[in-house]
Image 1: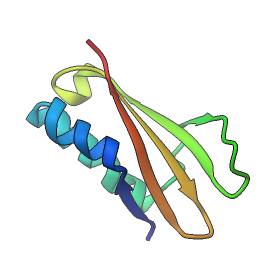
Image 2 (image 1 turned 90 degrees about the vertical axis):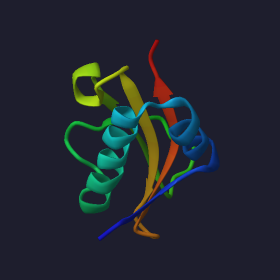
Image 3 (image 1 turned 135 degrees about the horizontal axis):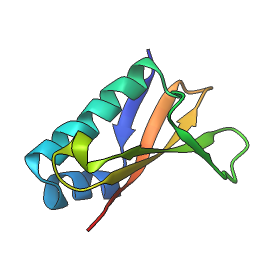
Image 4 (image 1 turned 90 degrees about the horizontal axis):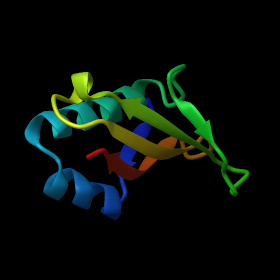
Length: 91
C-alpha cells in the first residue's frame, strides 16, 4: 500500500477553501491513490525529477457536489509515496 500525503499548500486549500462535499471528494481521491497511485484516469504531467512522476486527476462538479477540482500530485515509486501538491478548484 502506498502512502499519500497532502502538501502544506494542498492542506490549506482543503481546509479553508473547499466545502464539505468537495473535501469528501478530495479525501476519496487521496484514499484511492493509496491503493493505486497511477490509475487509468490520471493524466500524466511533465516532471523535472526523473525519480518521480506527476499526475492530475480531474473531479467533475457532479463528483464533488460543488465545483470542479483538479488534484495534482507526484508519485515516487522508490519511496512508495504520493504527495498531493495542489488542489485547483474551479469557479
